[in-house]
Length: 236
Ligand code: TMP
Ligand code: ASP
Image 1: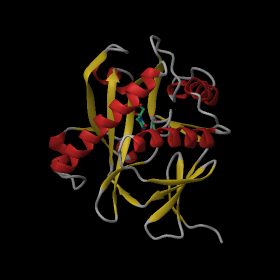
Image 2: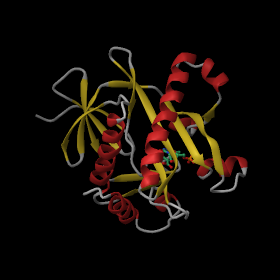
Image 3: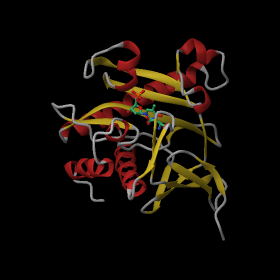
Image 4: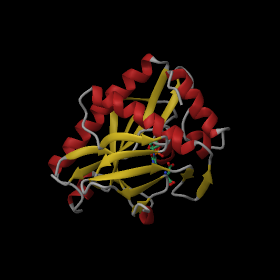
């Protein structure tokens, strides 16, 4: 029987599962940038991103972070808790790059100490605008307590991944997280963690091993992801 498609995003498809409180998430080979103004398909990308997500979610589980991941089914699908995604993209930045430099003129690579946590509205029609807490107050997206919880979790997740990657010779420049609410109302980390959603530089350089390779036309996207996997000793 064909599984029922619940939602299709730019990089993933979410299917109904045999359990009411679980879903199956399939990682696609598609890549988009600049709100899908740029769009391409790369063989193996879904499989590679799922392998990275598995790697980082395992690291977070070992460090006591609650996430939506239940298990991995095959090389491009995983089973996850069903959540209502909170329509906020939580971005944590350790160094200035990307939209922060474009918006504020910060020099690329400028250290942000302590790390900066920002919220963006997850809304393609509005081009995912940055939000301040005051804006969120007027939306039905999250309460002040929920925002504080997501910020605290995001900063903790940043600490865990930053120190781990640093020990491997890679700098976590910034990353985007999404949180969801389970059917019981608990807020947990959802979505994916991969070189699509993080900026990684080879330590001491600004060599990108992440989606900037595609955003900025800097070479072979999947090749760069594989180079990162090699450095981490992650078998793909
Ligand atoms: P930005 O500098 O373009 O705002 O991106 C910050 C981080 O968030 C970067 O690691 C890439 C990630 N990101 C996503 O995962 N999805 C998105 O839609 C955007 C805009 C950024
Ligand atoms: N994922 C986003 C998009 O296309 C943007 C990005 O990652 O830069 O639309």
